[in-house]
Image (cartoon, rainbow, N blue to C red; front, side, top):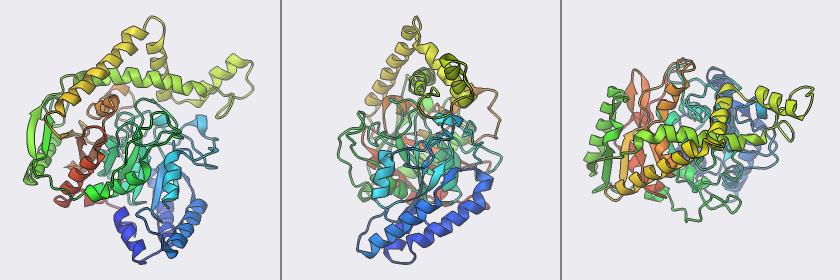
Length: 483
């Protein structure tokens, strides 16, 4: 049962081959047996899962149907879940039980999805390796000595190891697509505003976006269908109709114009990954796509702009964690200033502290115009590059990451080296565009992803291209040894 995709589970439940309760018990036992090697979960919700599974079976017995009805999933541990610990991978929120469900959690629960638990993540979603979590690093199931990528590394590792068919993640600078690439999954960052951020604990509010992680584009379409939609509780949510993503998967790629930016193939890209990307281009050409060389001239400025804007927003968002209302509080504070300083100093890990300090500096008097304002101007130039490119092409294709996964701890002493792993993903967040990573092969036994970007609200087009590619390749079907 654990090898079934979300789509296969939906068919199996509809055909009464097994019940949701049976499937849930199998997967919970598998998590208990295998997750100690991976550390992909922070909290398991066995009682809730069995209760939801029984309810889903009862709904099916009463004639209800739906692709997510009775399907087991997990949530990245920054989606608030009522009465369950929502930690953000941080000591600061280790004791926090959310008093309400995030919109994404509520929507998926209403669709009948079964929540098996909350997955491990980089602390407050800050990281590219899932090594900054208060609960310890997550291991990559393809090689337990390597990182799974971050910040949604727990969700990625759990799905890649077949502990469950799909999970939610969030993407601020590549945190769905990058771990998807490093663990051989399909991961989708929707258009900014497509999925509600209400109840999703913020890192950088103008960049964060929730989305699905699964083994196939077909499964991502099913999960995104349950997640997407307008939410009046989220002021950044966009009131745009949600298409039937699954219905569009089988469209022909004949005549589809795919742009390949020359800036993607610079000295920083592992040449073996470049070869795999070009092989995927050839595969799409066979399916009728037309390939065009394009340019994104301001891409070189993306990392410095992102690492001013994201920390600036983080320093503002994380100011609420002060030891007063909720979360970690230091022992026996001498006065209010001591309470603030020690609660934050003890509650936040080094990566979070680093980004708060960078952000506070960039926003400070005398430096705001020199850093933050300039970064926002660059952000606009990057968006303009994409708008110009999409006048010529329908999709932009390139690598998801410049390198395959690296060894645990290899980049801990050099944070900038880890930041550079986001070079291909952060532009989509700066521009608010949808992006998808899909499996494209292996380098030294480690997975590699190809990234697709599309115009606003064209998630369906990304899923269609990825699905057609996956009908003609088998990279996404490979399973890590031992799982």
